Length: 89
Ligand SMILES: [Zn+2]
Ligand SMILES: [Zn+2]
Image (cartoon, rainbow, N blue to C red; front, side):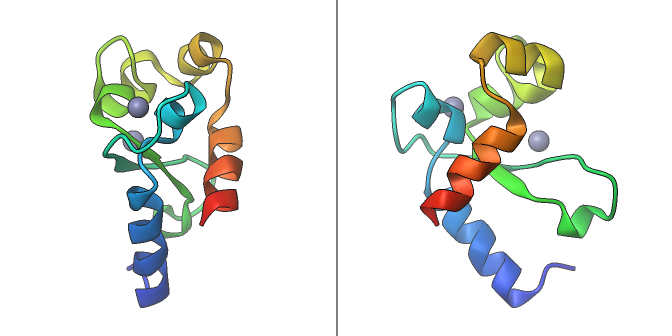
């Protein structure tokens, strides 16, 4: 279960808009939350905002391409997107 402060943080993160669109030069694309997979429990896994296109698109997204291809294609890693996201909230 996410705590109240976690929910508040998630809301702020989603409001930033897609972190990859921002990296590519356009800010404020409406985003959903993507959980970064690390070892450990899901509820404490960090999240980044990604638009549906970059989150779930078949050949354009982290889930569609897989992390390796995604990171190669866009030249940025999930962890870097997370760092940039956390710097903004
Ligand atoms: Zn995007
Ligand atoms: Zn996801």
